Length: 148
Length: 98
View 1 (cartoon, chains in turn yellow, orange):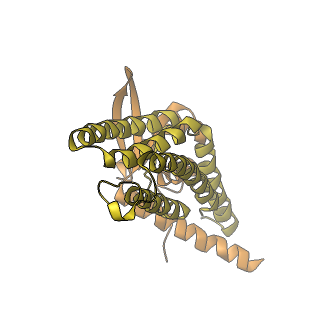
View 2 (cartoon, rainbow over the protein chains, first blue to last red; view 1 turned 30 degrees about the vertical axis):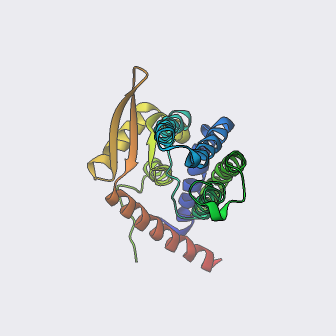
View 3 (tube, rainbow over the protein chains, first blue to last red; view 1 turned 90 degrees about the vertical axis):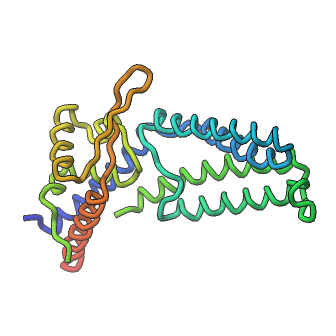
């Protein structure tokens, strides 16, 4: 039979195991930069002609698939971006910022809302995407440390 | 109140489930290194979890090497959550007694 102190020890061991697994094979920093580049590409292609937009979209989908494989091989795990906890708020913020940039830097689609030139929107998307992805990983690690 | 699950209760299996619950899919090698056990010990524990329907095992070839990927099934997630709730209830009685 499990005694109360054994139960507390088991919970602590579980938490340690999660944190240890996460620390063993961290995601390389270049992955965050690549994620930022993916977001920048997504914002930038909105201003291209249909033909170039289609080509750009195919390239971005291929890049997304390559990043999926990269994450799995680099870290030995796959973690979906949409999880409960702190990470959910970070994921929502990234989506909101990207949609905002998309609307305010795509004069061909949203001429009344233009705040940035397309290249400026893409540059901001790169910074926000790279920082957001880095922040997401920090939030994930914090969720693992807090999980009981 | 939730009760302790005898399949999950063993320390290695409990910690394996904890790691699997923190990701969508985890590679066998990472789980082995995190738990600091041998291949054979981990395989034995995973077999028990798989037989109980708690863990799904998927083999995939990458760069000419066979890799084994593991994930918790819906039943596994449910059983693990119930087991954790039971542990938390037990642990809280220890805190209340102090």
